[in-house]
Image 1 (cartoon, rainbow, N blue to C red):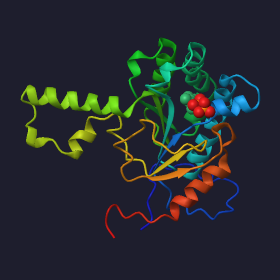
Image 2: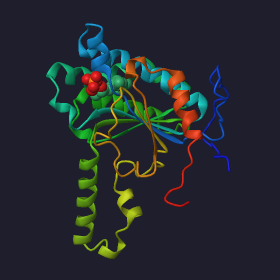
Image 3: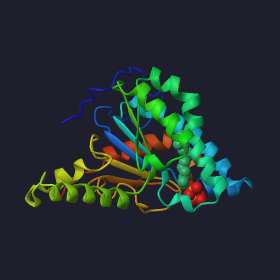
Image 4: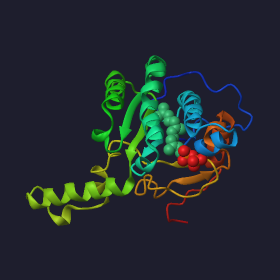
Length: 255
Ligand code: FPP
């Protein structure tokens, strides 16, 4: 049964369709671990931040593609709770990237009917990062096209512990019974509570691990890995990932 895309407004579809993608059977939610920026830069004798800068322009291209194709949600791992361990100049740069990205592309995102969201521990981000993202979320909150979801200061274990604490305090206050706790209730306390679960996880750069990304939400997702570093990732790679997804058989534990 083809999946329907009620949110898709754009009539434009990507130009080349050499793989014969079935636009009625796309993953609805694609999550991406954009890895390899540092190695890409190092290979060119450039500072690591040059890789992140190049990575930002790939974000723009993949957002355009996903929005044209009719993907509903694109979640991008832009900064993890572990990334604070990096040198200060790199952390500062990574915190500035969403600001630069939104300063440059927010008008286009609005034009494309994209809704900007975030997941993660938002309140401890630098104020300029919070301000730019909050403004983008405010200006796009009524858009019903692609949901562009930035994982910023996101860590799945932190998210789950936070959810457990929320539930425990509700039980303590008598708002909930222990017997009310089930998978649905737990999911409702996660940052992703309003989103459908990812169908497809992409990780670039040859690493094959989750790095504390959406551990609960990816339970039934298909995984797609490529050796390509994120700054070299392009529309064709993305299309291949979508195509391969369409040729997977998802059984959800059944037969
Ligand atoms: C991992 O590569 C990448 C990151 C920690 C940052 C990802 C950020 C971007 C791609 C730009 C985000 C853009 C916006 C608009 C927020 P790495 O640095 O760990 O690479 P390495 O493993 O080769 O060192």
